[in-house]
Every structure is written in structure tokens, then in C-alpha cells.
Length: 511
Image (cartoon, rainbow, N blue to C red; front, side):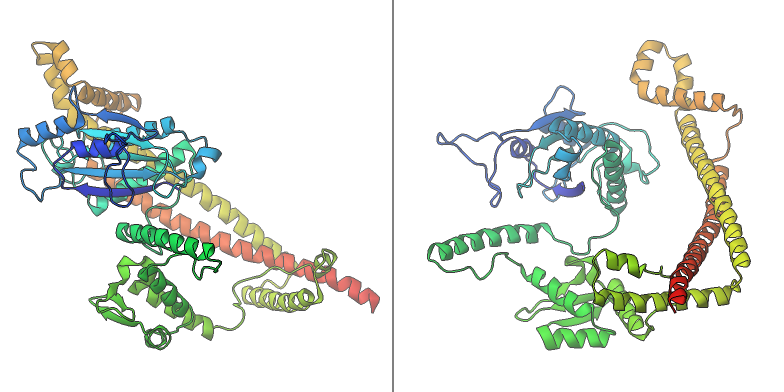
């Protein structure tokens, strides 16, 4: 499960970045480790490459860019950005991830997402937690040294213009997380959804507080063990760790915000308040509230109120829902597998409820006749497959529309440069200077020619067409979803009826 982390640095000493990547550092203090002669010690293993630096080192390239464009002259200016891609420790054994492969993925990621920035890409075989997670450091100078092709995700001139500074906005981070997910998917590596928030968010400061606390606890436990005394606690917990556990234990049982706040105060002496649409918590012994955002998404107002409402509805709901059909259990088969009498009693109750649900559904739909039920299942099956085919066709057309928009944009953007080529005094030199732009233009022109497009469509027309296709897809997808849900319910009901009568026949014969 590759993760993406961003660090903005105001340090004007660019050589310190390379030193950190190459030499060993104390994981708690961040200071360089020295050998017996007082010399810095190299890391056991690393891979390092630079991009967009020309004949200079990364530090020199960044300093020259700052001087050329008059940027980063103040102490508070962000001088560089570091992005860390940490891969799942299992990728090495299960998916053949090596340092060389990780370095290649890091270089590709840097070239595609940070063009024009002096960059240094370095891969390490392990992290601070010693779990064997290969990770890649991508450090870029904040100033872009050349104008680059505008991509669809770029919204402001700073994202592609020369001499502008990189900005890691929420939209940028969302795009980069998507890129990491697609990168891992293409490489066949483990990956999680990076777009949705973490239920329990751990900051950098809390992570290191855990590490330091665990180290002290381990030393204390070692002393107790040496003295013949059993340790009382093996895992260190921060204040926020304890707060998460206590809030979670109450959140699963409370049915209203008043009930939630009362239980927190009565059981754990934790005060909770709502201010400006946000929740904050005050544990016992503290004077400053802890914001819900700093401990995890599940503790914020929206999800807390949703959980409370769900708890309240669950208490008001009867034991089973008529529209949810459960399958009958083959009790005799389960008993032959070794299930006991307790399971048999539960299975009989379960089957009674399942048959009640089945009869309610069939009565509501007017499908108590077997032929009518079979006919309705056939109709839904046809509707299901027809809707699915339409959805697939619309997705194909949407992909074609998006591809056409990209080529039209590239054609319009680089056509003036292609026209200047004919009037250039030195076509070869002009070609070399604008190779990337001319390549993009020719690719777009070939696409338009191959598809017999003689008149460029309007970007607004293409966008409107895409929106129309998306609207149609949503409509047919809803039909597909409804048909699928009802089809599954009726098939389950038919199976339950058949199973019920198969069980009834031997019982009638015995009687």
C-alpha cells in the first residue's frame, strides 16, 4: 500500500538535502552520525539520480534558478519540496519490487509531475520503522526553470510557466495521490485508496512521540525483566491514542450528541464541544482542546453525527428488513459438518426469518405464481444486460471524447510554433530548440488526420458532449443498478422457496 507524503522546506542550504539522502542520520535527533575519525558515515545502500540540473549539482541548479528569477530571497520562502513515496513492505517478496525498480518508478513520477524543476530522486531500502519498506525521496527546487506543456490538471500559470514557484495545494496533492495509485496499479504493486481520509490520522510529531515513548518503555521493561518483575505495559500510547480508544468506545453506543457528550464526561472525564462546525475534545488533565481533525476523520462532526444517527435507527429497527432477502441455511448439511445443537437452533430461527422476508417480497411484487416469478426474472436479466451494454458503450465514447479534447488542445497550442518552423532561418536549430512542442503538434495532427477530422471542434462543444454522455451514463447506470438489485433479490427468493420445499418433502414422508 504505497503512501505519499509531502514536506515543504525553508532551508536555503540545498546541500543539506543531498547529505541527508546519502549519509546516516540519527532517527530521533536528525543529526549526522560520525565514525571514529569524526567523518560522516554513508548509508548502507541507496540509489540517487538528478533531473533538470544540466551539468550542475542539484544545489547549484537551485541556487542559479533562484538568482535568475529573483525568487526565494526571504527567510520564510519555501526553497524546496520533498515528496516521499513509501511502498508496501510486502511488495518486495510478493511483487518483485527492487530498489532499481522503485528508483525507475520514482524517476518516471518526477518527470511526469514536476517537469522543469531541478530534482533529485533517491531510493532507500528501509524506513525508520525497519519494516523493509522501500521508499523513494523526490526533492524538487521550488522554482521552475522552463515552460512546460500544460496538462489537464494544471489550473494556474504557476503550474506550467517558467520562473514560477511550485505550490502544493489540496488539488495538487489530490492529483499526485491519483498518480501514485495509478503508478502502483500499473506496476502490479499493493495499493490503498489515498483519496479518502484516514479514520485515525497520525501526524509526524505524534509518530516520533510514539517512537521515543516506545524506546523508553522498552528500556524500562528490560530493567523490570532483569529484576524478575513482569512489565505492566508493552505498547506505548500517546495521549491521542488513548483519546481515540475512549471516544470510539462511546461512539459505538451513543444514540444522540447529548448522550455522546454525557457518556464521554461520565466515563472518561472528556469534554466535547462544537465550534464553527467542528468538534474538539478536552481530555482530563489538559487545558487546551484537541481538534477532531488532528486525531482522525471518524471523530469529526459529519461522521460522528452519522454514526449517532445510525445507532439510533438500528435501535428503532425491527430484527429484519423486509427488503433484504437472506438465503436459507441447509441445516442438515451443516450438522453433518459437525455443527452443534446451538447452531441448529440459530439456523431454524434464521430460516424462519428468511422465509418471512421471501413471502413478504413475493406478495409485494405479486409474484407468488412460479411462472410469473420466472418471467419477471427473465425480464430483469434482459434489462440488466442491456443497461450494462449501454453503460460500456457510453464509457468508450467518453474516453474517445477526452482523447480528442487533449489532441485538439495540443494542436491549437503548438500550431503557431509549427508555422514558425517554415519561416525559420535555421530549421534544424529551430527543430532542436522546440523538439518537444513540435512532437506534440505532429502527434495531434496525425490523430486528427487518421480520424478524418478536417475542422477542429470547439472545446466548449466537446465539453458539452462529454457532460451529455456522462449524464446518459448516470441514467443507464442507475437502471443497471436497480435491475441488478431486484434480480438478485428475486433469484434469492426463488432459491429459498425451492430449498424450503426440498426440506419439507422428507418431513411429510416421515409423518
